Structure formats: structure tokens, C-alpha cells
Image (cartoon, rainbow, N blue to C red):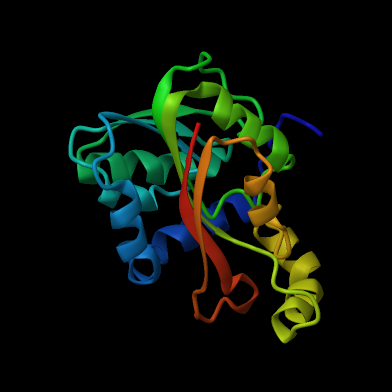
Length: 212
């Protein structure tokens, strides 16, 4: 798998604009969950794939955010969100599979609706575990593969190719739940649920936290 993200000069700006426009709706869908997951976060947070900065509204003012965001088309909106919410932002143009932070160096890592897009999710989770301090916390919200032989599963499979193309690598049917369960965390709290929205392929979701 490549450790380089291929920026798309057409889809990149389109997705950056779209995610910015959808920020309010995403807050409606995920705000309650994110406020609960991010509660009592430390002064420094590492976020894998922050996109346009949708999660900054849930961070305390003055938080130092290390943003692992390889899509350069998201950076302008990231900086704007940081100014709006009073976040001290450091952008690293890296993929989640290749993070240049030291071992055992951070207390809190965030990843929401991103594990579906990384080229090698196993390696990305290994990187998250590597940079977390002992007893460090990884919080996540992800859409996941639907149960076999269901209508949702059929829709995910039918939509996978166009969805994967338009959303720059997003997999509609990735089994992220199993990946998390086998990632080697010392403790894992995971809730499965359905988030009903017009984005039908991503209705099956999980949320929770893992402890190194």
C-alpha cells in the first residue's frame, strides 16, 4: 500500500466545499455523540483526517490540535475553522498509515468517518496505538459494513464503486468493527447503531473508545 495520498484537483475542491456546507447537518447527526466522546479531552488532541474541521466545535477553546490531513484541498477550511473556534492548529500533510509523531507521545486521538478512506486501516490503527501513551484514549465514529444478506448490504455493494470514486477512496462496506476488535487495544467500548440519513450506504455505524 502507498503511504502517499493522491490529491485530486477536481474532486478535492468539490469535497472540501461540500463538507464545509454539510457542517451544520453533520452536527445535527453526530453532535450529541461527539460531545460525549470528546468530553474532558486533554489540552492536545491528534485527529486523523479532520477534513474541513467539523470536529473543532467540540473541542475546548485553546486546544492544540495536531491534524493529520493529507488532502491539501481541506487545509484552507481547516485553518478557517481553527480561527473560528480558537484552536491552535498544526497541520501535518501525512496519511494515517505514516504518522511522524514519537511512540507513546499523545493522550488522545480522534477519528470520525475516516477509517473508511485510509488505504491500509490495519496499519493506521497500528500507528494510532504506537503514538498513544499507555492508557491513552482513541475515540471513533465510523460507518461500517452492513450485515450479510440485507438490503443495506446490497445497497452498499452496488454503490461502492461510484461512492469510492467520488469520495476519494471511501469504502461503503469496510468491516471496521472487526478491525477495531482485533487491533490489540487493552480495552474497547463499542456501540453499533443506525444513523438514518439520505446517505443510505453509511447508515450502519459504530462509535466508542479504545484504550491502549
